[in-house]
Length: 492
Image (cartoon, rainbow, N blue to C red; front, side, top):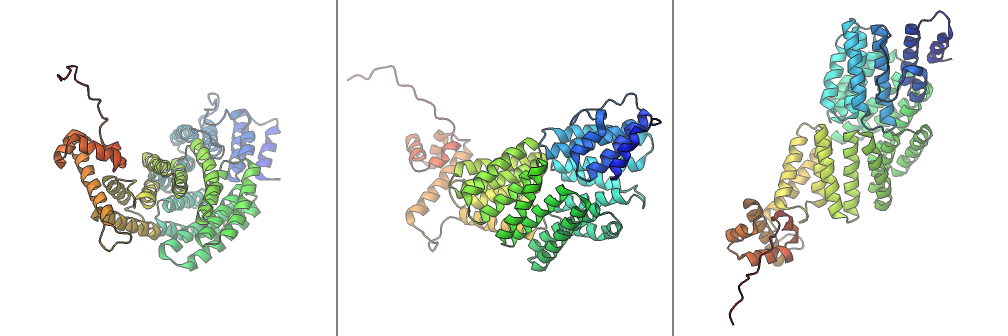
């Protein structure tokens, strides 16, 4: 019999008051949430549970009991909202958690305040608001005592995850190494979290330093995490680590093994009807792109984008849009690719996920920067935006991509050279002509009349050039106005 079962059994005791019954339900629900059994946690709350993001009726409960009910309903709303793709669930969960936090503060229950802050940090993290997540979780750690082992462990794990998502891998590794003594005495579920998070940090460091030893250690850590989660009966986290292991194998070029682990993760999430299945499919799309199986990748990523758009987790959604942009570019759907990559940048920037926005910008340059599909001024602006968004990254892969994009932009802006591959005088003149026309249109706000004057051309000549030789610059001009014919007939 589990701890949650024992607590639920106590509810049948005649001497249990309504307040005690509510507390027992909350504790049972908390145990089940920690085990990843969210549907069972919802059932444990019974009539206290009004639905995802809905406020429970706590008017007749004492302040501490009311705060506990709000905490568990808020926490479960965040977790269920994420796994079930419920739009707006994280924001509603935050409202419940803030109310619980204030009640715990008024009662002087600091450890419970930290617990509410942990769940708030999780909501911020799911929304891609990493700075907010970092701040609130560090605040939660400050007052915890040595006996608060489990909560401290959960906070340290999530803090390391925030640092990893922000490409601050050394900071994440430092947190995990300092936290290791906390986890040695922890249960299997917490040990699984530590091993899994250590594996992710090692994978990123492997890419940063180009050291295969880190990758080999990461595979060992993922395997340990999967073992501990199986011992704890935590299927969801087991599947998450199978997905992460597949991503590591994909990075190492071991595609067949990656697919095998994705199949295992897919089977678990599908059985649980878990919305996290989208993340497995996103990894699958990455592997298929690496294998140049673009049509298959297109079908997979289309479902991922649709699923993540419903969930409302912008950082992951932006990543999926970026992958879709790559697939469409490889399938020659250039306009669609450009549009979706711009959307990925906007989604990430609007949510504060600067790393995802920067990577989407780099992808836009990589897939389209070498052609006239992006104008010189657009290309320059996109590069400088990417440089600003990724200025704090420690990821050598990202830095290498940024430098490669810088070289590409410089080549474009400096024009063709006589000894360039496939050089021709016509193409060089065409490119130079396009650059001058673009500059003139930019300086005149898109006015063809004034741009023609700057270039020393007639209006009709420039309009003809835009229609014939430089159609990609048509979008820079103001809409052409229909010229009225004279009503005075010409005398013969």
